Length: 154
Length: 103
Image (cartoon, rainbow over all chains, first blue to last red; front, side, top):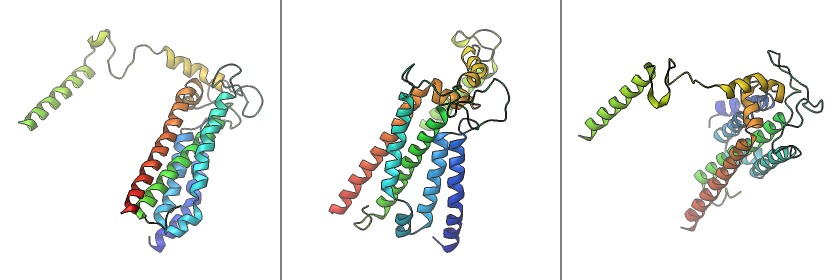
């Protein structure tokens, strides 16, 4: 792509990532959550893939780390579900407990506190990591398939 | 002929949905003064979620509290579906690329 697109991409990349992680982190307060925020972060990866040449993409984005993120995300989601096995699978044992993310909330309008909702933010983060890894890997696979050849075998 | 049939069936389907939408109907046993589309009659479940969701899960976003807490097992299925889909895309594209390199 042209120099204009590359400059815009390098400028916007950071902000797209920050916005995506904002959506993931505030999943229990505002619209959005793990799936949506992960998709936004994968959009940032796709922006880099569209804007740069192959060597630069390879320098910036590692496919092994994306696949690792996908696996780690799903694993930590399952672990967060299993952690409530004392009562039942996917029991929210951290909510209203006073521990991490354990502040209690009463019914009604409130400004929205981050330190609430128990295991929900942890699950949101896990799903966000999984989705960004999965969609990023798909984008990279498409790129490799389009370019083809021995040189791109990563 | 086929186009005429298509148009006629589309008009019939549209007329049926229009009739159902505006008529306070007795189709499907849903009698009374409620519209079939737009106003569900029984809402015990969503009333329960709206009134108790914040107390029980501590999340302001009721949708998240349903998706990750009340229906967490369903979300586990969704996440594994995404994982499997990515796995399938990887396998398929790798096979295609190997075929192209062989020739």
